[in-house]
Image (cartoon, rainbow over all chains, first blue to last red):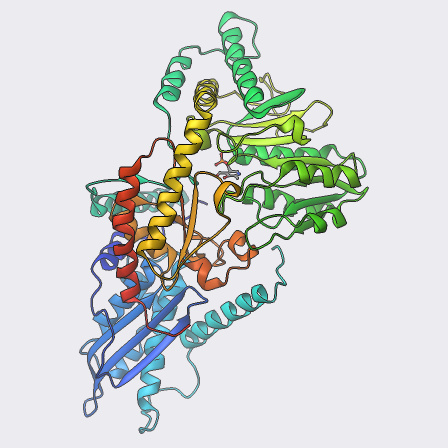
Length: 169
Length: 414
Ligand SMILES: Cc1ncc(COP(=O)(O)O)c(C=O)c1O
């Protein structure tokens, strides 16, 4: 591989940034979750409207604070899950999102991780207080852990700064 | 096989970037304010470059074209010495400011016998910060001096740190991100008072043409410069070295008129550099007041039109006349650079998303900006080539761009 830093964006990312789909808060959502934080510089909130009988996603939307890749991944994910069963939606990986977007470079992987993290959190939130289906694991999946790690890492970095204990790398 | 794969990767990248440019489209009006990352160029400097391309000679060779090339270098050296108020010494031409900073730090460390401490500020450009950090692997001790919330060096802290083990102190005359103008003379006095033999280097890439420089009077031993920062053609940088400062080369080769920077000199770019120095020198006061006017029009205009904005760095004469760095809360900086690009306004950001490390600008963190504020930062620089119409256009576009991104953002109470 060349040592040149890969392009952060593909034309598809730029297009979705310009015209995102399913943008905005959903007032009648029955599952909502956020991943990331303002301190990370990346945050996605996912809203799902779910048909309770069929356990199927009727509608999905998002809000995003983050870079263009973040907005594009969230937009793409909401498109992909509309009409899917919760089980199918659960199985979407951040790698799939990245491939659909023409390959996110490593520095932008966390955007995909956060989008998938927010979706899985919303699905878990939906089943809280309902009968948990077999396909929903008790343990956090690697992708969810990954999202948590991103959040934790940022918390630690932000804390280090606010304590003034900064160090050079 | 490997070759084919590499070629395939390159073709894919190329197709991607061509398609990005194509789908981006041509905005109706364009205002380029990303002078931090790549400067504009004076037409006259380009003309000088074109003309010097006909010289062909290498300044270290004894024939007519060689002497013509040497003439170009000496003119540039003289022009720079005059504009920076240098005393005795020499100018080493490199190909960028990054190279000049590396030569200053690595070259001095290589020549040092005994002294092992290097002192820099917490807000140095990475082309100072990284070489200084590297030297820790070679037995040097690195000390980073903190700054206050506007970016000014803590002189007491500096005084405490300088001792007989101090090899060099490197502090930028003007900070590249927040435009803070340091008091070089006060810094030099503090340093020389504690250790007369400590060498003082200043990264003056963003000071040249922006503030008056009188290096001899200020007591500065070495200073770095970058051509594109004064709108010379790219491909030229310079390090001024006072006569009694000993450096060792960090590159090795032959065929050069310069012991400290071997390799063919970029004579055409150096000729353009001389021309740019002349232009900045001749119009110094006028350019300064013009930039200051545009800068303040931009800062005040944004404060008037957009809520929840903070200015990073000081105001007035303690700030470089060209620098505007503002944070737009609830708005992520990299997304804002893309949104503004679609509107023909070109800027950069100190957000983590623009870095390769996922950490936001170390400069903004050093002036104790929170992560949220650093993520929303936008850096713009005005020049004498901009006018009020450009700033008005930016002031039209900025509120719209910020509004769009804030509308996308989840509503959280911070
Ligand atoms: C303060 C400062 N130092 C060094 C540099 C590096 O100069 P160059 O881009 O010529 O390598 C820059 C420019 O980006 C700068 O602003």
